[in-house]
Image (cartoon, rainbow, N blue to C red; front, side):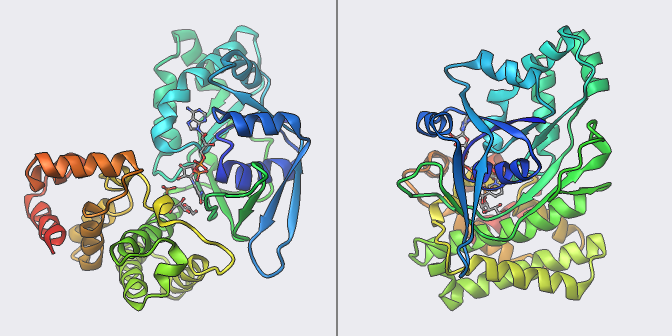
Length: 379
Ligand SMILES: NC(=O)c1ccc[n+]([C@@H]2O[C@H](COP(=O)([O-])OP(=O)(O)OC[C@H]3O[C@@H](n4cnc5c(N)ncnc54)[C@H](O)[C@@H]3O)[C@@H](O)[C@H]2O)c1
Ligand SMILES: O=P(O)(O)OC[C@@H](O)[C@@H](O)[C@H](O)[C@H](O)CO
């Protein structure tokens, strides 16, 4: 079995690569990072270390690297012969790889390849694969469209594992938290004979992705932006401060109340899920930079993203969103000169009225809510 995976970064090598390897796949990692691609081609193995007191390691083998910037034809060829295509490159990058995926699918059609294939975006985004599908379909001919409707699955997915930025001499070595969860919407899967061990296949992904995004990611981002406000550099360091921990717990209390009401989750089980998350963030064997978790703040302020969507839905249901609003205030005040979106956000705030910036980045039209956000920013 063959897989093509876009993005040989932290989660790519540290989770998707792990699962594909354990399931016996040969993996072609596609990336523009020359150091990583060269290392993948020079070496037969790389190691994953599980960050706990045992420090166990897994040796991953059976891979190669393709630089899509330098060798796009090799990517098309790899997709032509693959059983599965996965991505973990960041939502903003998905449009840039869409054409290559479309070309690979067109090649399969031209060669009368009857074997189905699934394309799965493993990004932190609701409807990530739907978004990628839309971008890929824009490059389809009418024949490709008909072929893809029959032979190409685009299932949405949720992935969860904390993989911080790696600073090792070995560019392939990756240290990951032991916990992991990969959930795939099986209703859109076309390769029904492939069932990846380590993946949960479900009929309705929505409760899973919302639970993950609005607990793990809303909580993580809350820790990062609140932590940065109080002068910290890493997530574990920030959570040692009771003010940051309290903000995290308050936010997870608000999204938890929403999720329990919306999806009918068992209250106690959800509380246990929250406790697990707090423990994961406090993992002493992981040092996760606030700049990584807080990266691309404009994306994180999006209409369907980890803050604005739970705020909108909590408001609709008459639930509390005070702590979520406070965190949004911290995001608008976030400053990382090395993050393009942070710089862009500052520029917007320096050149336009605050309520206009809020509308622009959040997509909100609810004037009362916009005013509440403005107050939170000023506070
Ligand atoms: N790291 C985590 O803890 C984690 C967990 C779950 C989900 N995710 C999601 O996975 C995605 C990737 O996150 P990450 O932390 O692994 O980031 P990362 O920066 O470590 O990896 C992204 C990789 O994509 C590559 N890339 C960028 N542009 C590219 C292009 N045009 N073509 C090919 N490759 C390109 C980069 O060189 C990099 O190696 C994000 O959507 C993130 O939200 C991350
Ligand atoms: O990847 P982002 O920028 O959407 O979010 C940053 C982190 O919260 C995220 O990468 C988590 O580590 C991950 O989602 C845990 O599963």
